[in-house]
Length: 67
Image (cartoon, rainbow, N blue to C red; front, side):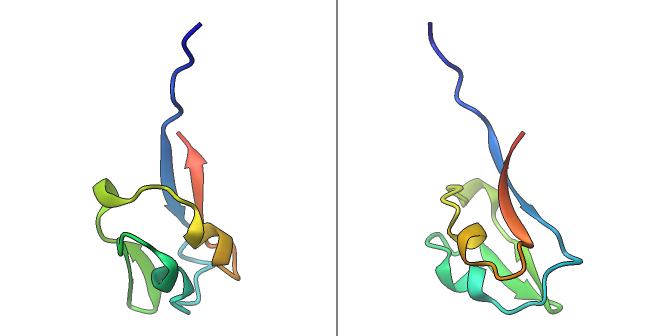
């Protein structure tokens, strides 16, 4: 049986983000930026869903979820 690959996406909870920029610094594809004191995904197509942003966010404001 062939298993379908799960579709994943990056989710940001802006209310929890304090704009520290740690996630931006660890992003290997540079698809995150701080704008207006909050993190923003600037290029969803280039995001590889590696999870580094989720791992290093001290406020749990960014994470990878299954769609």
